[in-house]
Length: 229
Length: 270
Image (cartoon, rainbow over all chains, first blue to last red; front, side, top):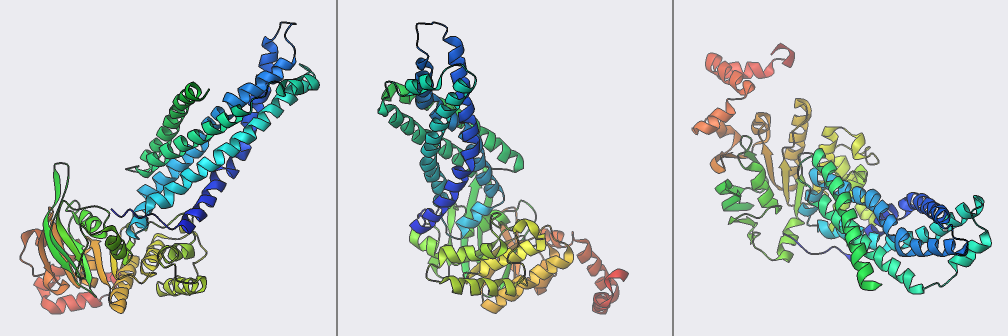
């Protein structure tokens, strides 16, 4: 089969199209999920912290640590596995069964570099940005929930999120985001690109893409924590 | 001219092509005729490079395609235009963008204006000059086939392959699509290969017909010769069509004049 890659200009244009679909179109769902996760985390930690010897600022500290180390990168990636993964697998699967991929191949266009590479690159670029957004909104959600419900004072929360900050944790979260992006986009693209059959198989490919991506995220999450922390 | 020599292709233990040798002639509509499951689509897939044959060779105007280097294969592929059974238009693009796509990808030297002119020309050639801004989901099956043809000829293809261009179309639209392919083939001197099992296409545009049966080429010839072919499998295939059977019966009962008379009768009276 023909395997020459497509011109850089073409890949670049496709990258921006995919970055919009993967990144910009996911801002709303990532924002909602992360804000509420931050809020719920704050309320639940406050509910469990009954010891008067532990300062209230610990709640802010724990929300920050949980958000940066685990909730923002992992939950965001799982949400994106559902939204972006199914979209990639469904889109490519439909293109396969309607012979659009064959049409590209017949034209002498490398379908993998034209269709798959921009999606993977766009995911690797956009996931970390969405994770950064998720971190900010989650911490903000915790702040709003804690202060508006009267669980803690705003001052305590801010003191908590500024305590013992380790910049490496941000880097760790971003490394996780890049790895998860590669896993979600790669698995989903593979499942979609090699779909055979009809509409039923496209649905099955989307489901398999999401399921396999989530399992891969959880496995990689454990491995990265064991290796990098 | 495309020369196919001793082509074999198997999927597991199922041998689909069993040493097919034939020639697709330049400037002619070469029809690959045969029943379902006889290997027509697999043969076409091998010719256009979507599948690799196990044994045998395919030569495009003297250049061997099978086992050639990537650069040579890429060069040949860029001379190929293909109309798929389901048209295979890109859903996310308008009709004009679909036609422009191969130009954009394959002819980087063309300016945007030249490409626009070429798209307009190709759409006009297939009678869709006013449909450029429509999405594929907004047009009929026949129009999709026309867009597919426009997209195939846009980069000045040398070889045109059509996978059942009439499938899913009403008889009148089928004939129009056949005529369009026939005109384009002769106008631009293209080597055209068409998969079909439609007898209307055979008698309408069959410059050169290749009959496949159970993975083997059993017969080839012209539309004038096909009705008198002596191959039993081919005769069985041809005369399974009610229209051909009826025409044959009229010819036997009333002679050639009966057929002429039949052809002149309005469709409503047949």
